[in-house]
Length: 413
Image 1 (cartoon, rainbow, N blue to C red):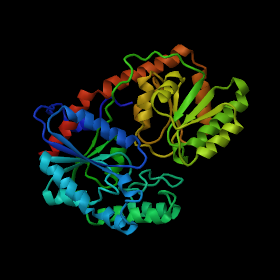
Image 2 (image 1 turned 120 degrees about the vertical axis):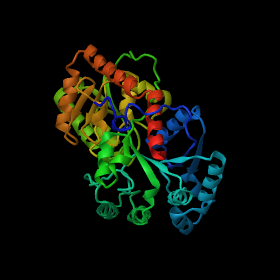
Image 3 (image 1 turned 60 degrees about the horizontal axis):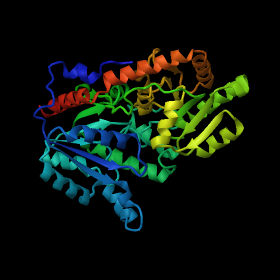
Image 4 (image 1 turned 60 degrees about the vertical axis):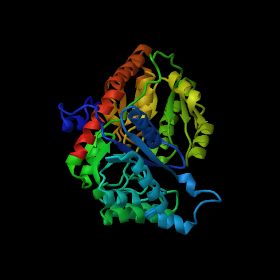
C-alpha cells in the first residue's frame, strides 16, 4: 500500500502550493449511465471551486438520444468533429481565459474536435487517465482476457471481433475508428500532462508509448462521510459494482458456492449490489445458493447502510482495474477489504487492511473469506481502522490540490 505517489516523486518537495493558481477549464462528456469517472469529475470541480479562476464545459451524451437527437449519420460525423461543441468550448474559453484545459471523456458529443481546438489555440491539455482509453475501445482492455495496452491496433481488432462495446461489432468498429483517427492524426500531442489515478495505470501508459516525464500519478481525493467509523458488523460480505464478467462476479458466486457446500447454513452471507449484463445470472445464483442475496442497484442511504453493516467489502475483478473507489468507501466506514491482485487495487491494500487473492481463483477467495471469518471481530475492525487511517493520510483534499497544482505548474512551464 503506497503512502507516496509517483507525482510526489516527480514534482519534488519544492513544488509550489495553490496560491495564485492559473485559470483552468474542465471538459467532460457525461455518459448515459453515471459512474466513477463522473464522480471524480464532480469531486475535482468541488476541489477547484474555491481555488481561483475555474470553469467547466460539460456535455451530455443524452443530447444525442430521443426524438430531438441528430440523425445517426450526423452523430457519426460529429463524433470526429462537432462544430456546435467546439463553438460552446470557444465561448467558455472566452469567459474563463483558461491557461490549461482539464480533459476527461469527450465522446461522443464533445468530440475529438476538443483536441484539434486545443492545438489551434495552443492551450495545453491535462488528460486524466481513468481507464485504458485511448488504447482500448471499451476502456477495460478486456475481451475475456486482459489485452496488452502497448498494442492498440491489435486491441481494437479483438474488441471488434467480440463486439465488446455495447454488444455490437458495428458500434465497436465505429468507436475504434474514432479513437484510431486520434492516434493517426497525432491529436494527443495536445496533451502536455497525463494524470493516472494509480501507479499501475501510469506504468501501463508509459509502456504504451507516453513519455514518462509527462505521466503522473495522483490518487483520487476523498471527502469523508463519517466523522468516526465504529459500526456494528452484520453477518454478510458485500460486493458493490457493475455486474459483468470482467468484475469477477462469476468467480465471486463460485467462491460462495464453495463456502455454502462447506458450511451450509453456517456459511456467511454475500450481498451483491449493482446492475449490468449479468443481473439475471446473479438472480439465478441467488436461487441456487441461499447464502447469496441480490439487492439490485443501490445508492444513497441504502448503500450506506449496506457498507456500514458488512464484515468486509469484496472486490474480485479479473480485469485490470485502474483503481476502486469502493475500497475508499469501505475504509470510510472502517471496513476491511478482500480484493483481487488486479490493476491498481493492490496499491490501496496491505496485510493490515485486508487480503489479496489471485484474480479469478474462486477457491482462494473462499479460503480468504474463511480466514476472515476465523478472526475475532476486533481484528476485522482493526483492519478497517488501519484502512481508514490510510484514507485520511493519502486522500486529503488540501494535499490533493497541492499535488495537482504542482502538475499544472509543470504543464505550463
